[in-house]
Length: 482
Image (cartoon, rainbow, N blue to C red; front, side, top):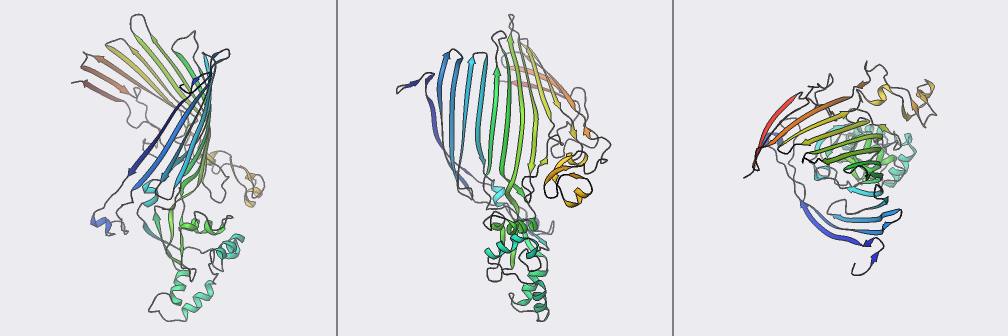
């Protein structure tokens, strides 16, 4: 304000910096490290130290204030730059948001933000575990004609196309070589199982997200203490880290339309002179290729009131309605969605209600949690879904589209389960507290008061399983201040 002010008041800003380091390690006993547990040596985890340097800033522009039809109008902008000492390097994130209140009772808001998530030390450097597989080489003469991009990328990588039959014949006519590198090793590299490793991928880069939120806040003057908020969100996360198998990585490396400068080829190892795989042929682990998209609406209702006798009442309800939740994890068909919405762990509707009444020395709380219905199996098993049509599915009438194009597929297994959904559930919790004096208080309560059991077949421990597995649970406690 010493320099100048906008019609809504002085500009507010903040700037700062941050430096942080992270270290991690895990060690194993000699038996585990000596491959005497699962026939595979488990190495110690001793990644290099992670260091991050960051600078950030934000600024708020109060454009208008206390004017007719402009109780408030403001814009806020923020940004952050981060520099990692690993494959991520320097990354940027920013957001911009606006607030507009035509009158004091209602406020509109909008925000657009970008974000980044750097891979963890485990993502990058978890110890490699050796595996073996019969890898089919896309650059082999027997395979190079199966995809027109194989020849282009193999040539760009300088990999010669050698016929399996010719190599095998050369090997069969030779004696066992005393030194690896002769005809026998070439034959072995082309025809036997190949060693590869699974673990961290030090070439991983950051995941990137974009989000748009639009909301309205209603706080009417005629109902002091009451507020109601509705927010629409649309979030896309790209470059997600997802694991692929060794053969998938090799195929994707040489079938990429963007050439060999891709995240798949960076994990493939070959002998530059022969073009043959050298162990480890592939690092099978996380790759930056997947994405997720979600849209939905959040609701937040709250009410607080203090009565003339000093008693206090507070109520708050929060609900989410998911419109879309799709994963895109097929690297060959990156636009092909895999529906996650309404599968186990991701109900379309979820809500919480909390009510508390404070009598002074005593207080009583009630909480309810609602979980909407969820499919027992995958959504695609007993519902029609978007998929890539093939000649076979079109001919059979399973896919209503053209071969090679996205269409609507019929359910994969309509009779998989006699019931399609786990039913919606509601859990009820009650808590009572009493203050003996300023130093001591007691509390007790019961969670899942109606002793709601999880659906048959679930124990509350499966991935994404949201159901309570304890049943009715009583507790009692004391708080003391000294």
